[in-house]
Image (cartoon, rainbow, N blue to C red):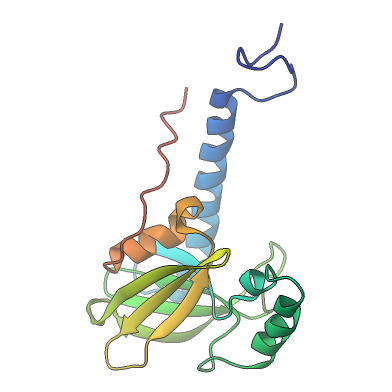
Length: 180
């Protein structure tokens, strides 16, 4: 007898199994991100989001031309920002933390503080779709705007929460229901 009453495939996960897997992933990823930033903050993190200064993955979706444009983006530095970073928000400050080794990986997830702004001086002024990424514009007080890229906010509850905390219109995460 199949596990999923909608499907005849006995190996297919049921909706309850998929939701349980998603809940476990959301909990473990949230813990991982908060544990990474905690040593660099003066108080407990409120929200942590993963961002990039370049929309390289998005550009690669453009046939042929995208590959060359992506190389150009990789070669130029945008405001001296790291390619991959975490933005961490605590009760009083927004922190920009760069990955020491370029990208986040389980075995080399080391961060270095790069910049910080008082929380009340930073707000999100715009969010727009840019190919397969979301382009988020942060207005950090008197500094130049930060234009950063992240995975779609509909499937990225961490960055979406940070955007909402800073006044941006980001979707709420999908309700995964209560654990059984």
